[in-house]
Amino acid sequence: MILISQAIFDTQMKTTFAGYLQIKDDKIVAIGPLSALPADEEVIDYGEQMIIPSFIDCHVHFFLSALLESGKITHLQGDSEEMFAQQVVDLPTIHGWKIGIGWFGSDFGQMVYPTKASLDRYCRETPVLLIAGDAHSIWLNSSALEALGITPDNLPQGMSGEAIMEDGQLTGCFLEAVAIHYLAHILNVYQDEAPEAYIHYMHRLNALGITTVGDVALTGESWDDLVYPNIYQEVEDAATVRAVFYPAMRSDITALHEIEKTYHSEKVQMGGVKQFFDGVTSTHTAFLKESYETPYYEGDIGAPLIPIEQMRTLILSANQQGWPMRIHTIGDQAIHQALGYFKESQQRYPLPPGKFNTLEHLEVMDPKDLSAINQEQLVLSVQPSHLLVGYDTLDEEVGIERAKGMFPFRSFIDYGGKLAFGTDTPVVVGVTPLESIYYAVARREKSGVPVERLMPTEVLPIAEALYAHTKGAAQALSRQDIGELRVGLKADLCVLSQNILECSEEEILKTQVRATMMDGEFVYRK
Image (cartoon, rainbow, N blue to C red; front, side, top):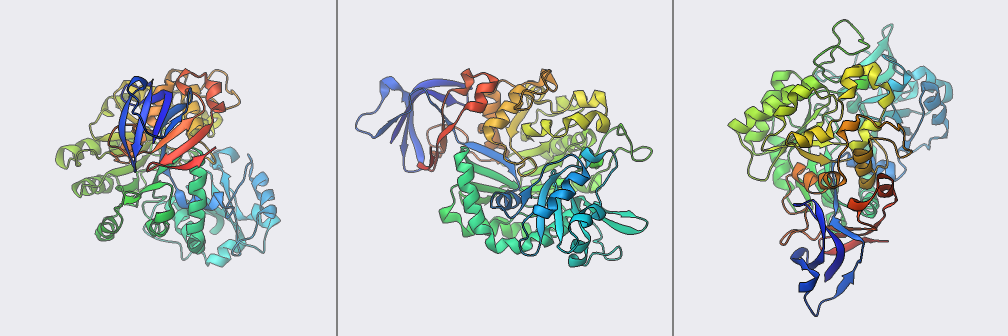
């Protein structure tokens, strides 16, 4: 077939042109101006509507997101411990548990953690699990602690994080890898139901213009990283989304080699490995160069989740195997260290052409380190919606001066960095690619607040934001066959209701996805 539009996005020039795309089987076989339109072919004329490469969400936690979309997990909202505790009464009980997600400890105050006591007041008999919005902590009631058999004497050893205690007793709040250790145990029962949930969620993503995701490990240390390639493989024939997944990088790489050998199709493939250098600012587990604004103790700069030298070893080991490494780095010290190790690794063990390491999040960025981001085999993977999460508490967490320089998307481009967009779903629930573009361009909420924008010098042009959610995201996944409208590449594309390069910020939010194509076949039409 042939698709015609007055606005086809050219990722190389970052502009649009009037022309056609010719598709045969699963590939783009020809592109040209309207004056050279081939004859005797089926033609779909999209007029002024915009044709772009289909969106790629390069950073997701697919298992959790699919469970949320299918109603197994419920999204909650509030700004106090009491507000969240009250809502557990109405949570559905599935497989004997009530499960919600959405609380942020920083909303409760600095160094304030929720406790089982508040949950017990509203629900004592049924186990309750509330997952933090950033997915780095969990909150359990007494019944949940009993169901899991958790006591102060049998906590997991040898992994980062902690069980918050008061007077020698468990409060019900757990952080980092220890939290994910228990989370995986609780959610394990849903794996049998996951195939249906995966297909359902894929159709939802198609309606947003997405045909490829990067599914990344939720932990680098727990026994289970919540990445399940076997589920993708089970539904591969019916899948309408490509999955490039990244299990946790371990010192023992035997199992990773087996995973790589098993999953390497165009739809389901191991793209590399993932690790966590630090945590998040809201719980002071992000690794900073200087003390937090409201320190929990003298000299509180957070800490690496795993020893610094061990992280270096893991990076070198992964790249030596030819595996791209994706590293969670939120604090400026974690970013600084990782940049140095990636530079060393490229010199010693350069990745095969077309493959890229990535730094994930890069929230608290020291301007002195911007000169180190322009590395040949490095992509900066960020989530524009994150700059709106708890932005009103950032001054309390990292201080006014550091907060002013957070999420420096424009600076990343200006310093020659390769920028990629993802959503980190379900850390921020329901964010669409078009909304991500809006957040990067407007630097404010959809309501227009704050009027003065967040870090206004870091506003991105629309074309750069669109590139980051297509070609840039493909680079983050080390995929050369998608992310562009180019002859020989996969016919993965999306039709938007208008040319967003000519839109105002507000009009981006009114833009609709009219059609989504994967492998030359429509997987969504409005």
